[in-house]
Image (cartoon, rainbow, N blue to C red; front, side, top):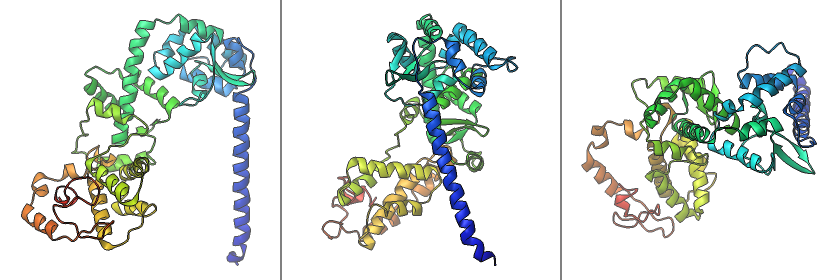
Length: 406
């Protein structure tokens, strides 16, 4: 019978998965060991390149956009890459932002190498673009520039390079901020939007090169066949289909300041509704501000990823207990307000509330007021009934009628 074989099949699958996990761990250990192998400085650029595999050299060739050299053997390719980059390093530098350029400047000022104490990106990205290399020297991990690259870097035009890098920094930050709100976009559409925001013409080819290289370094955004997307997007094709349903809707017109703020990896928009929920958690359940922010960040991401109010309530139940129906009603109202006032990818950065026609927002205010006055709401701490003029139980400091009872 097929059922009798199930335990045997399960054991085979379990053993296979275990071996795969062990192999992955071993591969990563070998990769790290090779990445940080012993080096003696100074090193020539060709010697650094010869330490790489032919596949890695081909990847560098692709990143530097070097044509007609794919037939070269490893030694020839390493020699060609070394000669090319020592003469044309400025072209790669013109794709950087301030953070990466400042790191290279630090290396140059330190005689060609610095001790690696952790960076906000994978150092292998420097290798893949032939800007710097890494290894272990005197028991310390270092990131260094071979002699040829160090000289080429020191010869770069500081004034022109600084202006280009400043522009790139804006492009990258605005792109990250835009994708925080929009999720996924065709890259030429996003380039046009950034041009509109900055009031400058954006060269699409240059913009694409800058963003593609930044995505390799920072991992906050990804360039895919579906367009450029926020790293939180699981299925860009599905998201684009959802966005397509709102063709009549224009992308929400965020300001430059809003997009720059949203480019921070820890950012989430603290709407008034979010703040009310935070007050509720802090004042009634003893959460710290950081703990409440952690929960709100999770909720913000969930809403952008098309989760429902029920999903949000289930998340909150992992952190809090609801003692009675009155508390449940207060929490449900707070969550619903957060949901309707949070910007969504599929709505092109709009909130559900912004898309409600004005006549529906203000329909039958007298009835709404009567219903609010008739509601029975109680304090979680005292159990006393909350009046319309009493402090709101969410902890905002406002009267109930001007806060959650509004």
